Image (cartoon, rainbow, N blue to C red; front, top):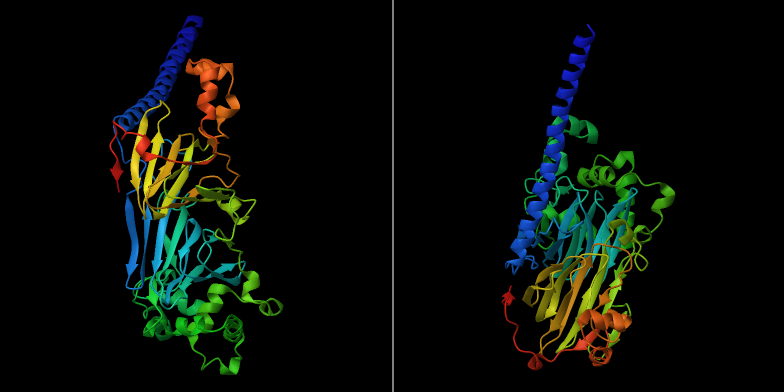
Length: 470
């Protein structure tokens, strides 16, 4: 009996061992596969993916006669802990991006034009006038609308799109509050029984409201029957608009039968009933603050250009998004010295001018040397050394986002404030294999800092990786 028990225990132990071993081996096998894949990806990059740091995968999200929105997809998911998709929203004069909410956080930058943004926050509609250079944050799930208030100028916005809270990673989803045949309102998904009861209207009134719109997500406010209500509302002065909202919400019962249902019912449902005391306040008081980059004094400026960065200490809404913002202006024939961002990945958009960008791999080889022109979008992984150079005949202006809202402290690899200057001594001389005297002469040769002069004629054209032109 004892032998039989011992044999049974032995069999159980053997079975458990064979059961556990495949799981452990399977785990290690996947680890090896991931490591091998990382090595293969890295080798492929080293072998010549010259355009990898230029973001060229543009996806058109929507387009109407009144404007369009497109998104440049982020890449490098194995190398970057957090990704930003860069978006571009263009709106024709006197147009409206209809009320909606998104599954992603937005930080928008007004490149050109002026806009009116309405944002519903804690059941209050706050409105803010935006101008060129303004930053503004729209949280995921918050209802908003945008209007181009300029009659003769197009509105151009650059967007940071954080999809980490989205339904699908890397994909932006619009949920339109207003709509009809195109686009569909999210309300249209419910059956008529639910909606007629929820809004306390007849089925014919419901069909009338939810089937009129056909211009798309961006509508012209000039000659559109389907946008007459919005045109009338948005054309009012801000205080008059507030009074109109009051009337729509508080319309007396005896007059309710003749009041256009679409304004009273729909706006009351979307924006919520506002308490009497709070409704006396101006919309502007409920609006989130904007932050203007062009009114900000540069963090650094010399004869060759200027630079500034905005973090959560400057503009508190950035803290919720975890996004930083920067602006670099290089004069013709200058460069932002070779440097490293130790805390964040950087995404850049060329606003104006031309030049080129160089990025270096950790093994000291040139990863990319690419021409830059207006509209070029690029990214630089955290820790990767890079340099931005303006052409000899025009300036180079770059706007961008970083993946951290904390203050950024780039480490410069050249110039009078470089890490080489800080490390200068026998240890650094030994690392380069030169004497201290030669090292001192090498480091002291450049007395400018951060933004340096660039003499293209002094340097022969780089061999190896060709220039990428996008």
